[in-house]
Length: 220
Image (cartoon, rainbow, N blue to C red; front, side, top):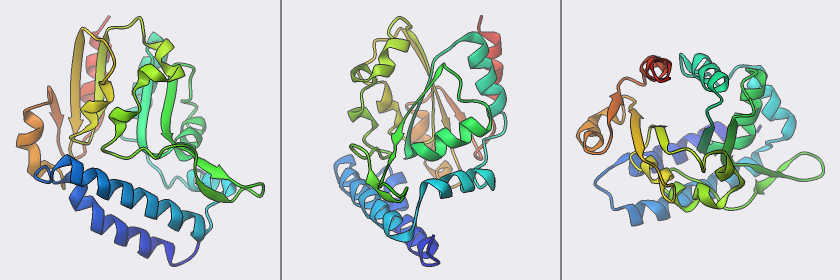
């Protein structure tokens, strides 16, 4: 990609990320800013030379690292045939490629994310469909997607996230039990009291999957 891309991308991050994680800013205001951030960034990506082949290279170079314990997490769910829905504001093409390279894209996994729209030469033109960002995941109700068939007869949810608004992902799903686990990084730990009000478990310091894997192992 162009040499100017990293600087411009980090400038966008530094401008919008504090807005995204500040619990004192009204959600309506945040929604507008997140739409602005994601729309500006995809335009930047398209102009900076993102291609299909570059996505493969990014993963081959191991520029994306799994959280410690994630491989065990995927294996436990695959062995128990538990559906795993990954709803991400990141790039679905990168997520799919990473899971393939980890031999973790098993039949029980469905990814709901932002997928690139490529031209005939494999260059990025934009995103397919509506943009998913950190604050509008409730608008992508699983009940209205093909993924719903894999969970419609299940009534227990284990929700893992790192955003205060990720709890919205379960809107439209009828469940009996919900266990919510938040993974906080050093930049979001300052708002831990807000997370304590909504989440059952909080993992600090951008921690590993140890607690989750132990919980899954204990559940028959």
